[in-house]
Length: 69
Image (cartoon, rainbow, N blue to C red; front, side, top):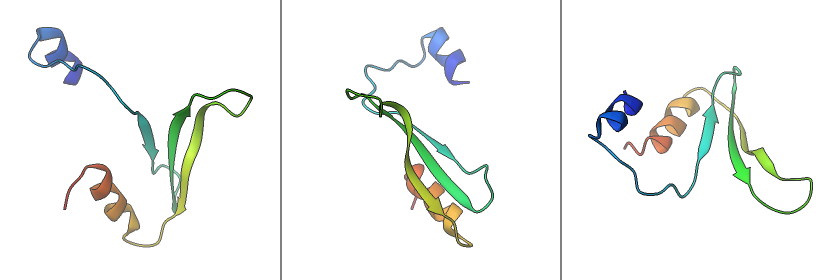
């Protein structure tokens, strides 16, 4: 839907400051990938957050990600 509206000209974005990917696919765990642009070998898309989930934690994290109260 996003790409469709973008192509039709109904929405546009001006800049992107930060991109992160959030994963809940491994049962009991949450991790986040962020792009680290720095010199050396420890650069690129790396795990920036790793959390062992307790019951109810997934919903709390999702609400934070989606900026819901």
